[in-house]
Image (cartoon, rainbow, N blue to C red):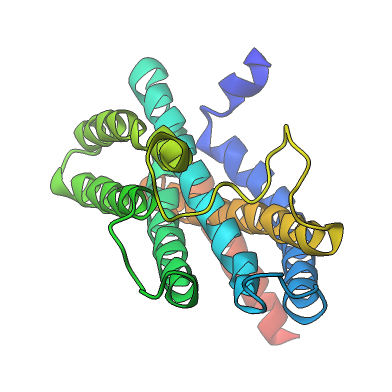
Length: 255
């Protein structure tokens, strides 16, 4: 385990291993997500009280889950940056934060669309919605703080501190419906309890959730590879990689 953790300190090693996993993450993620969405939107039964309006759950829940999970990953990367000063941890933060913004925006938008027929309003200052909005501001703050410093090491430390401090918002999001009297419904399903929905409803939802996480892995790896090339462009292995890529393009063009 420690040997693997030590290897993560090598951008060159990670670049290569990420390239091996990316095709599988993309293929399986797309397969699960598309199958789950088609099943949920087209073939799952209507809900007793919300009829067909509940079907937006197959987009809202995966994006909301992942938006929170990505921030937790960023906070862990922040700890690694401060304690072990591992460059790859900051690379992950730079790669994942913009994805977190998109996911949070999608969760807020789909929640608003779902809230109109359910609550009669697109937005209410509900504890869950407000804490999700704060999550969006935290993501934007992480991105902005990263660009506020010309020194990458200073920027990495500042971003790490903000991400760690902001992680207190995650349990607030999760338990807000239990701590306060809110309009937002409780969790759709929990690992420790039997799902309230029939399998025809929650199985496709679980497929989309798993598929979305895998697709995030593909996007994160791709963006991390790009960031690694930007940071390591003066190293010999990157120059050799670029040269090899150019030669392969010439060969394919000549063929």
